[in-house]
Length: 178
Image 1: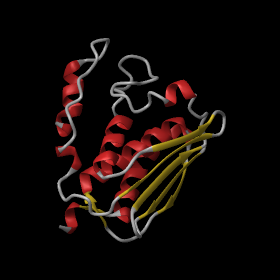
Image 2 (image 1 turned 180 degrees about the horizontal axis):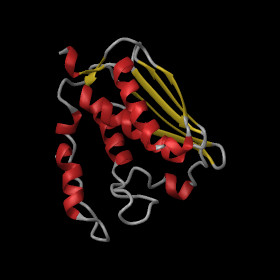
Image 3 (image 1 turned 45 degrees about the horizontal axis):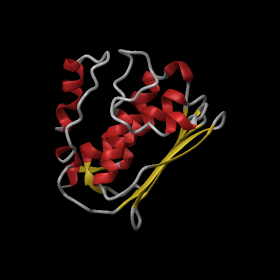
Image 4 (image 1 turned 60 degrees about the vertical axis):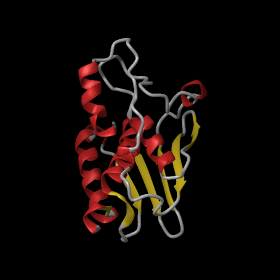
């Protein structure tokens, strides 16, 4: 149904407003290139996926976050930031469940893991390019209309490591994904 599809015009406006409020001290600029057409993927999946990628880019960006969405033949999404870039030793682990570069209690290390799994369930593969000192780019191409079943219903259960994570918080965060 139309209500359960991603509406780039409305949904991106809401996501950007939230991110501008969260990262207000940075006064980030968002450059958005997206179709006006509805995207035939589950609304929750798309908000989760695009929201996680934009949030990650916003955390690291110095001034600018760019998003490009194309759904003409396949769904192509690209999110870039002008942040410090990702060192190779971190890039290798960035999609691992519960991997975070933040201090204990400051993040769960699940945003990019969930995004990567959503992309995989959409028939795509997440790719990263990053250059230290120049920023990072996350991009993927997924098949259009691969499944009408929301991806979050198909994600495998993620088990938290035992060092320092509050399992109550982790269970709450993952309750959508089980």
